[in-house]
Image 1 (cartoon, helix red, strand yellow):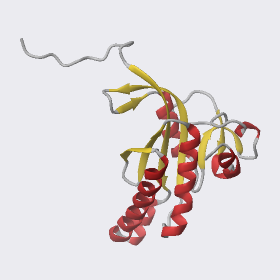
Image 2 (cartoon, helix red, strand yellow; image 1 turned 90 degrees about the vertical axis):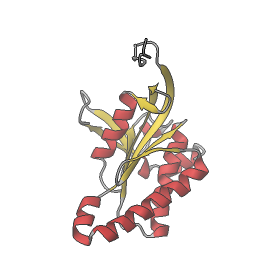
Image 3 (cartoon, helix red, strand yellow; image 1 turned 180 degrees about the vertical axis):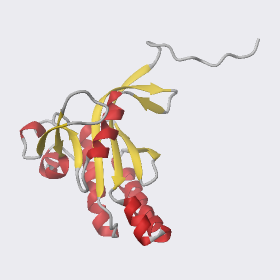
Length: 183
């Protein structure tokens, strides 16, 4: 009898707690259209090198490249927050002309087939990145201890694909808090 492929069944999946980040170059398509492919690829190369350099020292994994962005996975929110903030700083050092924007979220997800993550938390991080403005790093306001009482809170926003408004903060405005938490 031929081998039958495994079929997912609820309850059989491994659930893990992870922190996800989606980082993206703001205005990449417009930059590419205005400046041409060669300069766009140069900016993309600088972005990827900055991300690799920072992630290699923080334990945050680049799960996949997404054109002019990337999906990141970490074991905790502080390391994710400090990594993304460090990448923003590295942009200035290596002359990336485009701003970074990002969305981060933490929660329980399904570890699917050993190398992919499925769940609401992943989707939330991706959608927060989509709505973040250049330079913003949006997170739910409970992402880090003390964040909900900081000046980084932006208030409630509508996030595509999610029912009801979500209260968010911009951790780019809370670098001191991230540093105080060990980031």
